[in-house]
Length: 216
Image (cartoon, rainbow, N blue to C red; front, side, top):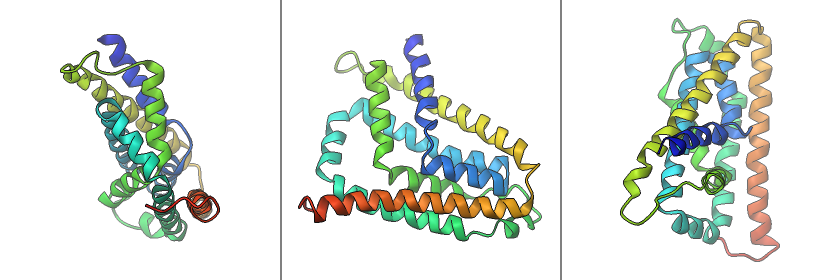
């Protein structure tokens, strides 16, 4: 059991490590609002990764069939959502947040924003599927699903540790960054997320318009 728990912890770290929309969001929140705000945003990503881990362990075949059947819709809707979130990131005013008496800037909005972005990214669940397949983790036989619960907890712990360390490091550099630089970081990260969203949207529209695949 312990080897599987260790593998789950590693999966949590590996699932969080790729640079994608959520990572960019966490970086932006940390640099503009501080370590606590960035960590809370990262916890939203932990919830997403843990949910995908549960799906990967208990309903892999069903989830894979759903993604295959509705891939175009997921790409179009997810791409639009990611692009909209990127737009608000780019237009946000970090100085208004920094002028508040509460400099931590923690809000439920940051947490929910990360969750929305995570669930709108079809690539995230595929990464989780691949990691569990690579490490060979799953119920050994029907009726023993309970045995993977410690593994799911380990995935959550690994993702939490990763985001805590990353946001702590970013907080260290944040103290050396000028306010004007934070404004440009907001704009650049926002534009980057918009481009990712447009890429997802473009792929979905390409499959519908040029390949003739129905949007269902």
